[in-house]
Image 1 (cartoon, one colour):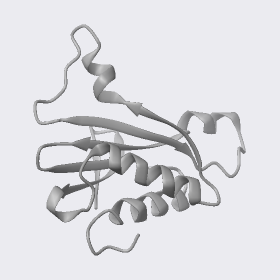
Image 2 (cartoon, rainbow, N blue to C red):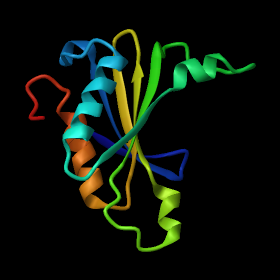
Image 3 (cartoon, rainbow, N blue to C red):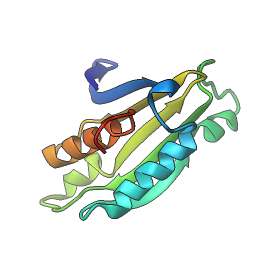
Image 4 (cartoon, helix red, strand yellow):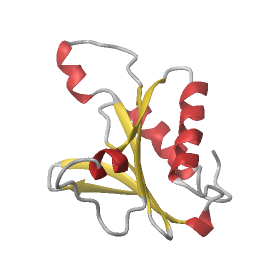
Length: 133
């Protein structure tokens, strides 16, 4: 798992894996897996799934990188406290899943809560063969 600054302002975590390194065969299978992890977690609440690929293809002038076969977001919330209204700007959470012919890029924006980052990182690393879920 790598941490980087996307477009010089967005701190993200990402994992690129080859399809031979995971039991998952499609972005949708990964979505279903993450939804189950979210549903089973004592704090998280599943909100929805966003089919970014279909959305972008449906837009006049919408562009998708040639290597992307599918692109989805799993949207959910970790919020255990709402100490001030401004916290809504950084919620909810999303795990992005981009599928290519050879693999997946799974990513998320760094959260202001260590528990959220640690949990999402564990979930994502868990999709790699022989990794702890």
